[in-house]
Length: 88
Image (cartoon, rainbow, N blue to C red; front, side):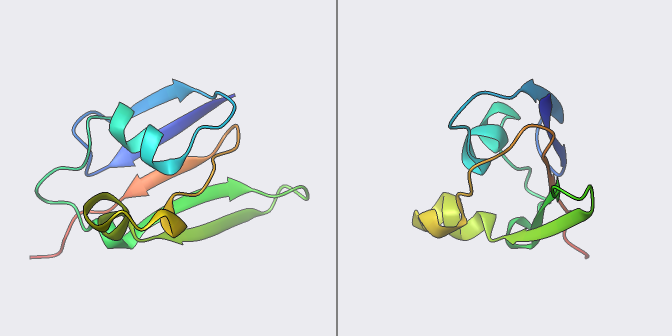
């Protein structure tokens, strides 16, 4: 399974999942966020064991600018990270 990164990133991509991959790894593989990103409103979408969709909030700005590793969640195969754009 691949892991996807969509939204306000430089290059939305699907990357092959690898053991130990984190949110930061995936976002950096997508070239980082754009200047329009609302990075602290990032969401991680994941299916649980019952195939229900879970939505986990990610404070990506805190992670990237302040090194807050609490937001650097480990990814699972099939996860999708979505970085929304700011409302102007």
